[in-house]
Image (cartoon, rainbow, N blue to C red; front, top):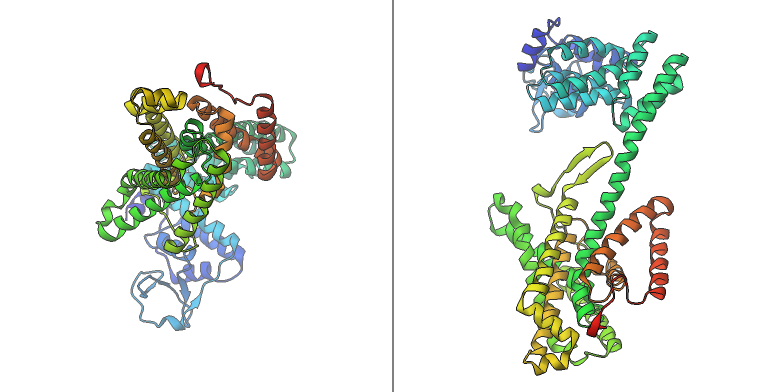
Length: 523
């Protein structure tokens, strides 16, 4: 009724939807049905919007006696014109068929009717939908009335763009010039498509010049959005590589252990996240589900850290100083961990659902949309990095780790429990791998082979940044992420990966110590 009241306030002629009008929209040739839709939105009543929405949702049906009815999810049937219940079996009803052209027309018609919504956001969305619908002179009077009655400035600007799109096919040159000038203020791909279409059909030289100028303006704006989107994607990939490589910077960079099971420790963190999700879903109220990720972060860290500590105490402690043996041993451990997970959870991927607060995206510019889960991972990587830096530089454990790394015999002589420090350091690196797995569960599949996709990249980050150098790890991760995404746009994903690998090989040949070399006694 609010829709009807607002339409009346615009002084639109109104009339009740009749069965004949509903039938004309529901069957016949496409042009006749489109004309009938235009007539309906010019003289709407309270049943017009539900009827058109039902058509678009494939809930409109034809009765044997030639009437149009609407079905509901509960199986009931109502008259399309009056909304009154109709006692007819569903088996006797015939489906109303729609082609793509009719669906597009219905989308535009529904958007036009939603211009009367009390919510400015919904009116703005309706204006954008009409803008995307393109040229249609029949919508100009409706848009003029909407602009005259619109109190919100942002919505009024969107309506003005929709009016310009509708006017772009006007037979009058002045109208086409006005539309072409106004469309240049838009910054959407749909406007670019519309301008290209109008430019191909336009015959007047003056209008063509304005269309070309507007098209260049829109293309420049979209190009900036695409460039910034590529930069964000590279930073997002770099933050994931940073999370993966931080744990390896401890186990390989500080302890000299070539840990081929690092990827499987990430996988354990991802599966710990999955189990916490299952526990929240089965044993806690549904309203608590969105908080499962907060509980999963420490669970992933502790689970991977405990597994890492067990591996260090039982296998790796006997192999320090023998890189080849640690490589072979950890490779065997990685196979054992993968098979254990397959036995427990199966070979198929498990479903990890992101909380609702990580859903959706933030649109900053046309062509630049930032997914919330990627933004959260970037912030999480920065937080983990800050925690790592504080732990290594400001805590007793960090002091012991640095002492053992620089000179193990002297540290032992000074009373540092080197065997215990090795266990703590390896557990810390393993726990960081678990945090990486927790983060990766929000953007990719969780399965037994999760770690295999990142282990090579993680080693490249650590070696390129410099063994044992956190600053080098950060720069290498971001650099590799940005380089990968920049090259993907030029040569494709596979060739980009090969090019980055070749660059790292050449770089290490020229500078074996990486970006940041050890200094003093550490060297």
